[in-house]
Image (cartoon, rainbow, N blue to C red; front, side):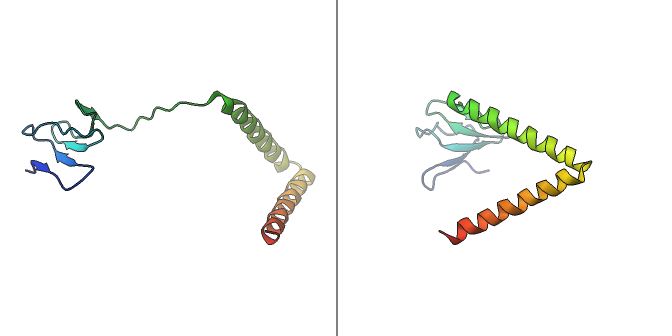
Length: 109
């Protein structure tokens, strides 16, 4: 069994309960007893899981609302276009025009 492997920073340890806690915050170990990776807080070990915590800047919320509205509008148009050949043709023309605009933007750079 690997006891302690120290090759540089960050340090990687195999947990076998025979070593002292490293004093480096962020050190990662595999805890074979509980079958999880853990990260050192400097004073203890914390399990690494697949949960994510994040904070959202409240100024982004109107942008998210706008994006959701635009996505909903696009979806509704695509559904209507399935039964309306004229609308389908116009949406295809719009896609063609958007592609041409992108091409011109690339050429004028």
